[in-house]
Image (cartoon, rainbow, N blue to C red; front, side, top):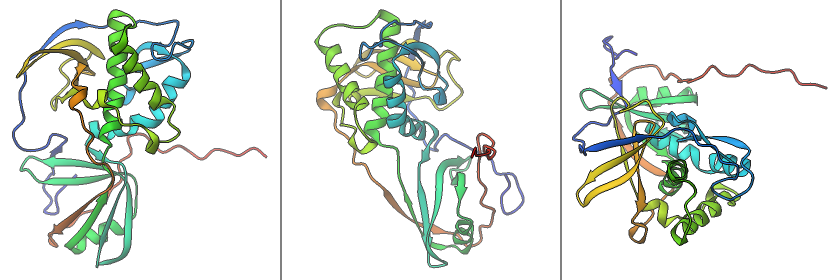
Amino acid sequence: MNRASGGPLDFGIEPPGPTETVPLRLIEVLRPRMFDDCPICGDPATTEEHVPPQRLGGTRMTRTCARCNNSFGTLLEADLVDWFDEAWSTSSFQSDAVAGRRQTSRLLRRWTSDGQFIFLPEGRCDPAVGGILAAGGDVTLEVSPPDQNRCHLALLKSMYLALCIKAGVPQGEPADRLRAELLAVRDAKRKADVPVSPIALGLTVLRHWGDPITEESVVLAELQSETGPLLGFLLAGRVFVSASSSWSEATAAPSGRLVYQLQVDASVRGDVASVHPQPPPQAGRRRA
C-alpha cells in the first residue's frame, strides 16, 4: 500500500503511545485433554473445542457438547475477534459531499509508525466512501465497537476450559456459579439477550502486542501484578486471562454505536480497497 505521494505506507496493529510492561512467568504448557462429558453442562461431549477460539490461534484442546460449542461461537466469538483484531464490526461514513450514509462492513483500525491511524475495510464497502474521504472536510463516522461483556464471556469460557484441562472439572459453589453464568449465555436466543456476567467482567485481561510470546495454544502462567502474583492462562501467546475474578467490583461498559466527527484533509488521496482474508466463495449450483 502506498501513500498519495507515492511512498510506501507502513502500518501495524499496535496503537501508538506508551504501553505497560508487566512481568509474566510461563509455568506449564497444557496438552489436549478430552472429556467424555461436556465440562460446562455435563451432556455427552461430542465435538472438539478450540481453546482459545481458532480465529485467535487456538487449537483443538478438549471436547464439549455441540450446543455449548456452537452457541458460544454464535453469540460471543465475533466480539472477541473484533477486540483482538482492533476492528469495528459495522460502520458508516457520511458527509455533505455524498448524499446519504454509506456503509462498510468490518473496519480494521491500524496505526502508522508516525502515530497516524488508517482504516482498512474488510469485505464489502460502498465505493462512495472513497468519494467522501477524497472530498475532505467534516466526516461523520458511526461504528459498532465490540461488546465488552460478550468479549469477556468468550474469554471466561476459554479460561474455564483451560482450567478443566489443567486440573479436571472443578467442583464446589464458585465453580457452580461460573457454570451457571456460562449456561445462561448459552441459552440466550440472540446476542442482545446475553446477560451481563460479573464474573467475566471481573477477569484480569491483558493483551500482548508484539509477536506471540509462545506458539502454544494454552500455557499456565503467573502475572506479577501490583497486588502480587496472579495465576492465569496465556492464550495463543498473546492474551493473558486470570484464573480468578474480582467479580464483586465488575461493571459493564456501555454498549451501542459510537459516533466520531472527523476532519479529513482534502489533500489526502487514495483508493478504498477491500481486504479479504480468504478468497470469496464461488457461487454454487442450485438443485431443482
